[in-house]
Each structure stands twice: as C-alpha cells, then as structure tokens.
Length: 69
Image (cartoon, rainbow, N blue to C red; front, side, top):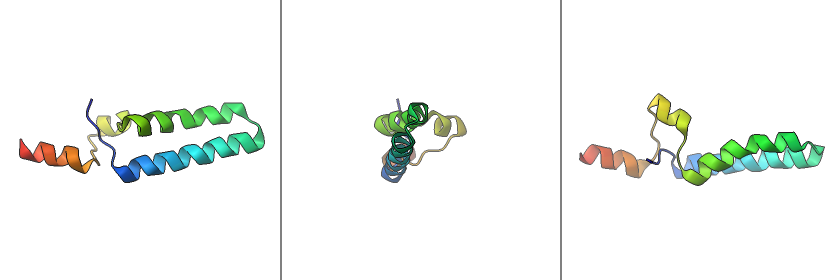
C-alpha cells in the first residue's frame, strides 16, 4: 500500500472528523457520527482510495521516490 496523503491532508481529515463527531454528539445524532469514520480510516492509513483512483499523490516522500526510479 502506497501512502498518498501529506501531513496537512491527514491533519485536515482529523479536524473534519472531530467536527463531525462533535456535531453528532451535541445533537445526539449517533448516525451522524458514523460519517467521521472514513476520515478517520484514511487519515490513520495515510492512503485515500479516491486520490489513488484520480492519480493524486500529495505525499512528498512517495513523490520523491517515484522521481528516483
């Protein structure tokens, strides 16, 4: 599995996850809190399947490895 998220992407995903979790907790809507799960999983793994399908790679380390080959 190749990482395609930069630190900024991961940070933004964690912020979005926290905002969605807080909105769900404050409104007592548990179903809303499940929308934070994809953001958590992609940030945790450092890989976004949507980015991979579109050919986007924001990881500077992975991009430099591709340039070396």
